[in-house]
Length: 122
Image 1 (tube, rainbow, N blue to C red):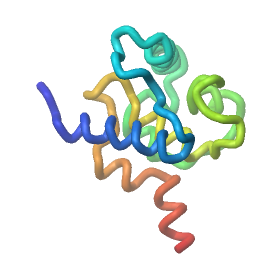
Image 2: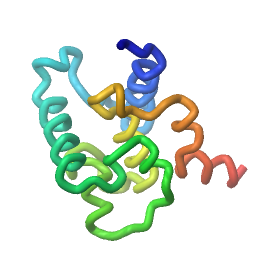
Image 3: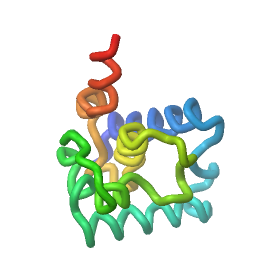
Image 4: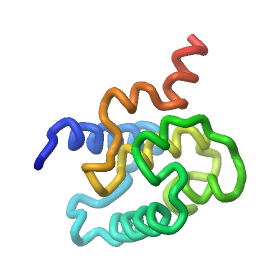
């Protein structure tokens, strides 16, 4: 069924994207937004064919290792500006998972490596 907290994580992902990049990740009508449709197709392809960080919400909480295979799972090349950190890309992509049943929970967002790294620096 519907889980309002997973919708909140989606909304927070959209807001985080907007705060970092000064634009929204998708248009208002997702069903007719080509950018969203391309993102959803990319996400499904990566999840089904490569597993890794997109295999489950829990996999997103593992430390980033680096490498070309992992980079492919941090979002389509056209979705983020080139200077975007790997960790922030990873969190945003996980928060914008098109499948709400596989999306991060609020607790998982707070335990993501990017946020724990930022908290440790303070």
